[in-house]
Image (cartoon, rainbow, N blue to C red; front, side, top):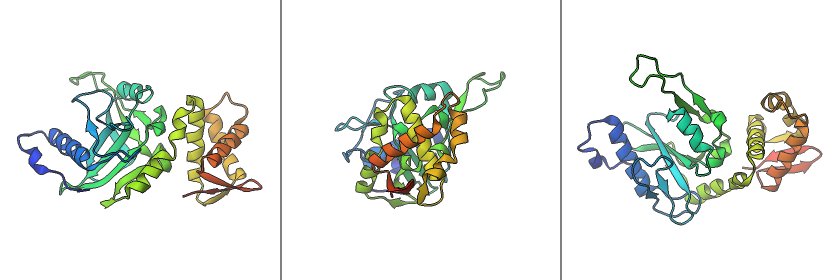
Length: 255
């Protein structure tokens, strides 16, 4: 994997946004691979396709690319709010690549967030443009990656270090079971994962998770069996090898 962009492709473009798009999309097409099955290269869709930028011919996974210059941050500026929320709640929602690059036009970070981790909760609506703006009333959005479980942030390149494709593929496929769950169950799984990650210790207890009961009650005000739902999700995460049950209400996070 070559972390440098092909800067020759920038010739003939004057817009910084166009240059960034051409260089980053070319880099992904030539250097990336499918995090699900390992197939290389990825194929690109026709320009301006509203759903995704790339796809894998082997396993048909689809990917959309978001890129920016500078340091990786947990807040990503995106396009129209309604378009984004409709996209991630559709049956054809893609996985998302996030790429950051430096002044030397080389990749610093390149990660994927599998589509099962994209929920409306992480899409933050911005204020509509003022009445004096050319696109008056248009409403954009930000993507808040701080609300995504760490299991959903899979680096292919981290701080200019290339991660083993085998590690990437294992991490990507570890949570694909979530896709087959109902929207309600999916929401509960992601909430409990997020709660577990807030616990600083690797070992934790059922009581530690119960401490989040009031927070979960706010999100699910009509559910009167919060603790039952917590135990249900813990059992599922145990069965899927994400946590380990050590008996007597004690658990362990699995790396």
